[in-house]
Image 1 (cartoon, rainbow, N blue to C red):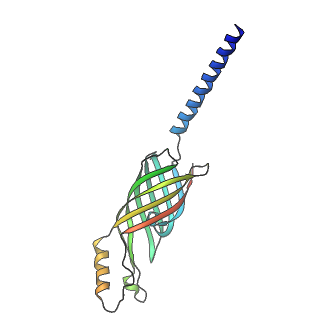
Image 2 (image 1 turned 135 degrees about the vertical axis):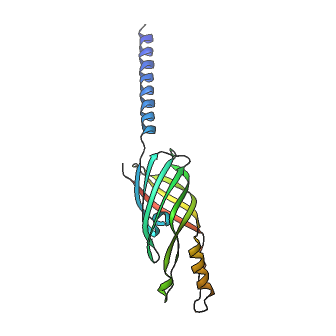
Length: 182
């Protein structure tokens, strides 16, 4: 009888601990970090270098804004990301944004120096690091240039006074560290 009582008590204790663990796990899944801010490079951070803030109204959706320096002037971007595996340590994502995605920087003739805005889309990943849900962001995007940039750049290439040393690329890289704020 004592053995049966002890086994029953152990089984009941194990079930109680198991239920408590499931409740804790369920609570962890409901609560998630909703706000991130951090420095980085690339147009999601507003330019060559800048700061990005991201708000997650739901785990899978991030709404972000970036501000920084883009070659000749300040730059900005606003957009959204869809997190494919939001609970995973390595979370692939897709994103789209509008803002600065091309620039002209002419040495010796600053009249052409300008930042241009347009749409961009990309793929990337968040990698959670540390205990506080901080994350590293990696991204690769394609920028859709506006017609004014294409006109201005075409005019520069056609002008014999200028020697174009580098053709711009539609593809861009992004990297940054994002601090979890809640």
